[in-house]
Image (tube, rainbow, N blue to C red):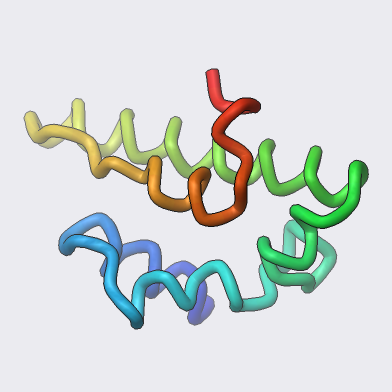
Length: 88
């Protein structure tokens, strides 16, 4: 498990805080080892980070449904990255 995956798991169990929001400052392999904040600055990177965020949310929806829980609200990440207009 990468550090970023560990932070995501923490985020799903707690409200976002300083530790959890650092997820957006961690290099992510599927983002070419750039941080989500770095990627959000360019068109190409923005497309990748949007795809990554949607993947995280879809995975969380499946996990929560399988465990009979409410899914983690990750809207704060979209807001922090100023990408809310791209969220479906």
